[in-house]
Length: 455
Ligand code: CAO
Image 1 (cartoon, protein in one colour):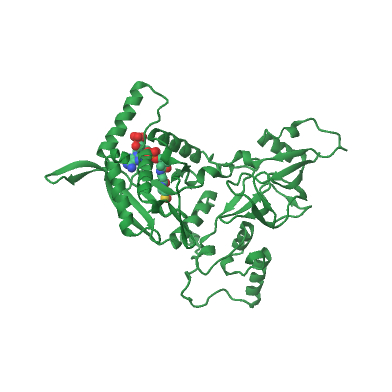
Image 2 (cartoon, rainbow, N blue to C red):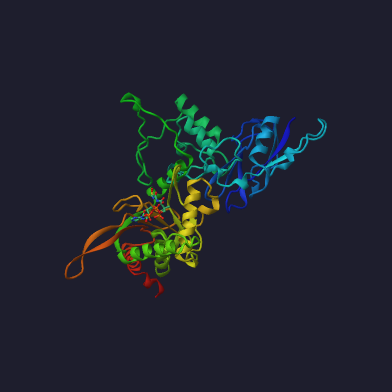
């Protein structure tokens, strides 16, 4: 017997009153699990709402222009017995579905598919269609946001255009606010085929980045290859990194911190805790001290805790610190909230837990939002120095490489000191070189003697 599944807005983080900009299905349409039902667009991201089950759309509860938030009912989907069982298996909370089957004449039972309760499932390796759906968030790609190329299109239209090899940046949109619709992409392709339009080959106007198209090469001509799809995280972070790299005039400043005493102290405290058998004490990490020191330096130099908003600089009074975590699916940046109120043990424990959740694909959208500044530490792996990319809308990021014993001149002789390489990349529109260097020098002083953080 068919059952009716309610599709609601899943956990979309802090987004509220998000307008529906496109309905991708109509009543009567047959949909497969994971098919996109509609697209929402906030100021920052476009989100496709995937259908949690396979079935037939029996009712749409919203229309284009409606503003929605987490939990709002979007559509009803009628599913066959097999699909309904799948929903129940994935979502024990939907107890109604396990109730004895009513007689055929009674209305189909309504099963809620609250994707929100499984936040982060979107990033879980080995996703299956039984995992309640998460919104597919697509950040503006570089081609859409570079000067002179503003393209508004939903992920489904982008996908459609990509399949046809069409650069959406070249298509004019006829939808609301110039949004590019599927029909616009089709019309553009028809224009090319009929010769009515030509791909943009105009001479550079001097305003935007008139880049060459991406090289299309048949690598198989040169040898054996294997093609692997990029992970979702890589696709999302790739688009963000490209935009940030292309749009932020960033400069990287290097500094060495003498952490001889700090590292000795860290090891000593960890040893003491181990000896005492105190299982409640977290293992102190260098990352925890780095977070502490960065917060102190941001308090001294508030431009580092800022974001550009048009012609304004927004100065934040809270201290949320993101840190890059290397996961099997790609780079993720969990955020430690109110780091200024936490001690090093708490920072070590929380960063360890967040990193673990990132690796297991269990971070919720809220765990990755609101960062003021990011630390990217590859020191556990190696490296000397590197130039990290600013994580917009933040204005600076600290790269940390592997500490090493180096001979340092103390005025009389070379002495061995444990040296930590720091690489600070800063947005030059907000932070000039002198300020960045002052920040770095102060940070190195703090790490050299953490007693300074009490001053
Ligand atoms: N120099 C020398 N050794 C270091 C170090 C440094 N700067 N930082 C960490 N280490 C050591 C640690 O002390 C630890 O050794 P012990 O086990 O003997 O104590 C070991 O390296 C492993 O540390 P770790 O990297 O697992 O833990 P962490 O708390 O230092 O870092 C995290 C946590 C999440 C930052 C890290 O695991 C990670 O994912 N780093 C990669 C981040 C990344 O990919 N950045 C690039 C982004 S841009 O593409």
